[in-house]
Image (cartoon, rainbow, N blue to C red; front, side):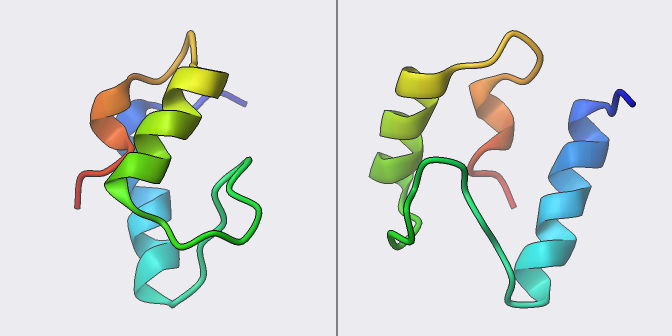
Length: 56
């Protein structure tokens, strides 16, 4: 099943509002912009771009 960037972003906004969030590769670390930058550079994506990782 494919989702759009907007659908993925909305999904994580809902999860964040519920107090539940998991970031692949973060290993329980506190989510910061520096962490997201590091993870994005490490894992990258051919489907989603960096713009959706820290927007609210």
